[in-house]
Length: 391
Image: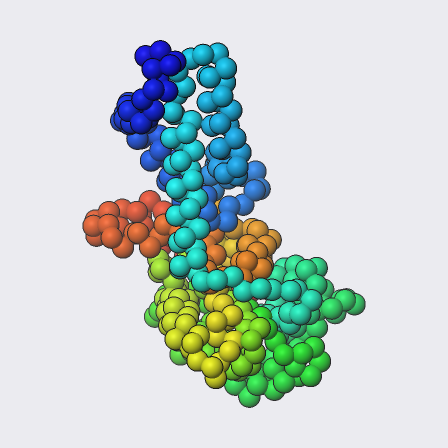
């Protein structure tokens, strides 16, 4: 086909060129691109440790801004025209596919996670339970750097808090006691203002098989890991719903809430309950969004956090069964991802490492494959030498 003939029948040429591209190898290519893009939507650590998460992080260069992709496609087309050759529609087909991927992702985010809540950090008052150390303390420091007022609730103060001269205030609060929670909320309101961000982070782990647990141990585990979320949320939510500014509630659960694991019956059950709590509460808030009595409902956001093994004191003695497929999540990476999720202003889920996004699919596999996957992962044997620790 000559250059003139090509433009004499543009529609026929376009259909012919695109049809010729739909080969098995091209369809395989766009399928791989689609899968990689879906996986890289999750927060991925940039620390250079060999793991599936880091390899996926390296593939992020495959997904540049859409303006760059279309500029390359247009440049390729003009280059072919400049040398009087029949242009290839491969660049435009790929650019169209990327546009479709990005558009579907944006539509999914908008429909699934709602409209973004406008957030000004200087107007935010954040309360973090279990924030005297570990993940909670890192979140507190990042929020302080962002300009928010931060209150840490814990039964003990850390050395950092005792030396702290800045804006992070510590309150001694037992989150299992409803009256203490209500009084502490009032103190924060008097000292800093009405809280707009609640991060339910307090948690403990016993690390013992069911028959070795005492009633006191598993009752305390549920009281701190699960029931405290009811106490704090029931106290904080009314002011969020009554203010047009709304608020954000962060629920720190665990990927083990999906998986379950030997020696963790109480811990995994308490974390599984939090995932149901998050989903149900989100539905209740959504139903209130059209109520004039609750102007803040449409601006109240829920963020669920489902990490794998964290590099905190709680699991400091535990060796990851697989550093490649299940790398230890650095607390600083997770803290940053949580704050980014709050700043984004939408409902959502923060899951790290990448297998935390895929673990829900384990339930659709045949039972035999599920057992094989658990055996290969080593998840049920990892806790045998674990001692009781508190985060």
